[in-house]
Image (cartoon, rainbow, N blue to C red; front, side, top):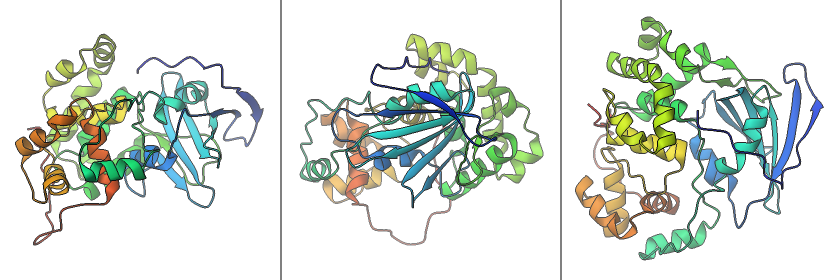
Length: 324
């Protein structure tokens, strides 16, 4: 996995004993530079209401995440105060890594300096959502496995498959979580998942074969990412195309320019928001060209605006993420 961040001076972690299932709790806080909407930035990483790796305690306004860090599994709880400060608490052997990485998760490395909204709709969304940032998990393989599961199926199918696989073959996360959370399997764990489990989760053989192949190459992908050659390394793998690469970069690296070409709905939504009518992928790329370097930010702002193309006809059954 991508190297852990060093603890910044502004963090003041301390440990104390909590419930037996949580062990030592590490606490800290993150004071963002500028506005931060924690929920707009981090909640989008949740894969459906039953995601076993992330949940939201709405009464307490707490986001809970279970992850497998380079130092072991960890549970991270994030709660934003009225002054914008984010209170952090983590449990498990990977708690120090999770605390140190939390600012990146909250968009600390996202730089919108000089961003020109240009379009009235984008400008309005940018004005209304000053705290929307592009966060990153720095967990490359987990993001890639998650994205592969979302290939060529509806989001409902993908969320169900992710929930079943991770809950059964992942590792129970420590700490006083409001519901049972699970860290995803290790790459070797993904390789050992039996064929019947993939089938029962609703995944097709091409998806399971791709995840198994990627799991075998996980260390090499991490090295490629460190050298700046991640895209070419992913393209060398069967079943990995531009949509999968873009989605992985968005989630793991917070790439502000990634565009998920090949998504069934995205081009239609972007076209409708910016011109009033749908376009294809080529048309979407042409519309987004003036924002080169910030295209994912524009897409997120379009999503935050609430403007979407009206549905026409029957609901589509499959989402064609054309990686094969």
